[in-house]
Length: 348
Image 1 (tube, rainbow, N blue to C red):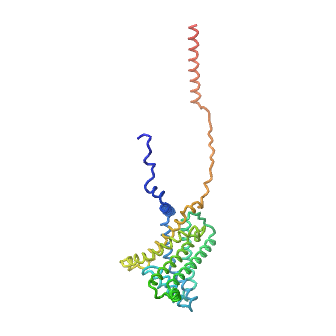
Image 2 (image 1 turned 90 degrees about the horizontal axis):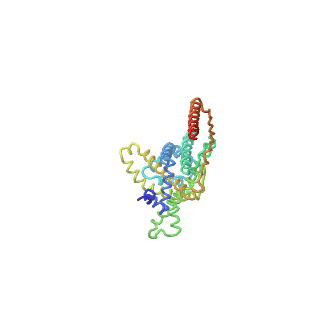
Image 3 (image 1 turned 90 degrees about the vertical axis):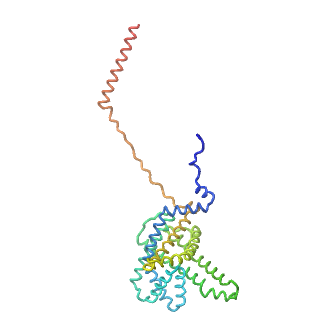
């Protein structure tokens, strides 16, 4: 019908659902930001650098821990057990083997091992910070090479300390401390105390992991943001990571049972677990950056400078052809005017 409403102007199904459900609109904005800022590309790069960095970094870290905690083997064992418990499936056993080798050969790591671990760790940290910065859509300036590497080194140390605290809380929640609390409260014979302990351990683990991810999302980008703006993304990442550990153990067991898993089991486990974890962290960062409050404070790049180009047009005159045309028009006009005058005289 002419003059009727245009059907194409009506919002689609997804647009109507987004308008009615703010949480869905937030998810769509997050996914769009993740894809536009090449989240999968950065996750693939992080996975590659994780494979390169994980062995030397773990070797050096636990070699140092072996020296520091040489007189406290029970504490060292609790920390290593907490790490393997947070890594699903047979991959945890592989990491445990690396840890045991690092502790046994801590005197042989030396300066070369420290340099190798530092190089690999700095490369991994630089890519992680660039990826997080891209999800926040912040400007990425190169800066001084030495200053950037020093900042990356400080961020790597900070992340290591945050992970130590998180693993310490996980070890406490599942170790003799919980048993001591149970005995102190005299509730060891209470029905369902085992279930309550497992729930408490899970909540403590989620809280510790969420705190680490919140610190990563807020402080590791090249332009840090407030913790308040990253809390929601950090909590979602912490919950998602705990679910990932449970689901990952089942998935990795099925992957490692195949022909490729037999030959390349440990490396496949690191690749799969590392890539999914990287995608989770980057998507949660995009989720945090896509809240309306953070989008209102987002960096808006300055518009490009205007370029004024003067246009000069030179009039070179009528030329020969133009002159001939003007003369011809004048002759024709004069002839017509003279004919008109003669006609008037003859009538008069």
